[in-house]
Amino acid sequence: MLLLLRSLDISRNGLTGAVLAAVGVFLPVYLTVTLCAPVYRRLSANPALQAFVKGVTAAATGAIAGAIVVIARHSIHDIRTVATCGLAFLTLQRWKLPEPLVVIAAGIAGLLLFRLPVGT
Image (cartoon, rainbow, N blue to C red; front, side):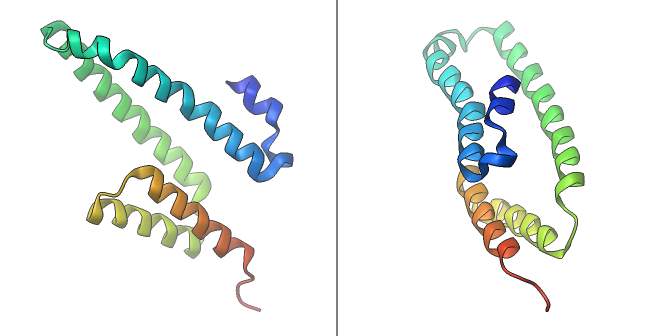
């Protein structure tokens, strides 16, 4: 995966590179979940598998929370980014919209907010 992202060189390929990187990150996970779902459904009544899934879920939650802190430290640095983050969080809490929809909306907001001159 890292080699794929490096070969795309997102800093030079802009939106195209970002889209290809997103597809490279999310498509394998989506396909894995989709292809393994029938097997998981068959085995889901197994108590050992249920315990395993609970442990993996807790670990994934911790890893995601840690990643959020790292990403937030690098991404939230002015009033516009604070507002975008806050609105995305409130939108997810209030209306329970699908996360990809909120991410796309926040990306569009970022394009509008950071391409338009502020102040002078």
